[in-house]
Length: 210
Image (cartoon, rainbow, N blue to C red; front, side):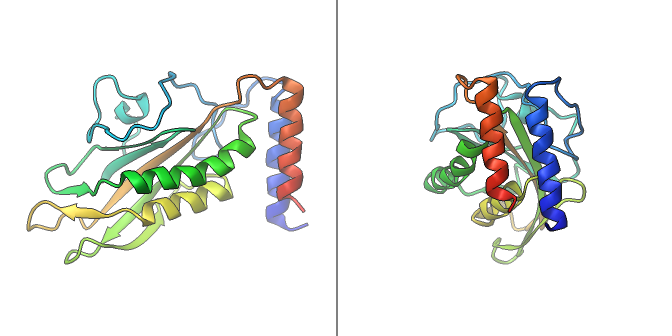
């Protein structure tokens, strides 16, 4: 068994054990955290505010965790895909893409339905580099220390941001690079018993560790 497979095995054994014992508290930069946020209506919203509002999800409003050049925050739940701009409002904007957001959400759902035997939050930050002449994306890479600890999340976040289109609002073509924070919130299936949750965890473990 490869080293990576062993790590995945240990990771999911901890999941199974935690179903019966107390929650393991870890840093967001190390492992997925329990979802402790306030619950909001989870439906796909085509019309969304461009910037955070007073009644927005706490993820968009929390300034304590903000890093330099953090321009956008993206929140993915089971049924909704939300984007807010939190910096460079007069210089840059993301081109609205309702169809693309809806299509990308379906990719997340495919994994979501496999691992919703427990509440999870996968978070990552991607640095985006734009061509100053075309405003097209030239390169995307993870910001140091903010790589989600799940292979599927790592791949999905890159795939997701790669489809984004941006537009400069002034001739200054600034910023040429900025950060996008993504939070993928997974909620445990409400009617799942403890025993069923453990069975689902083991089933997922067997599928991805061979």
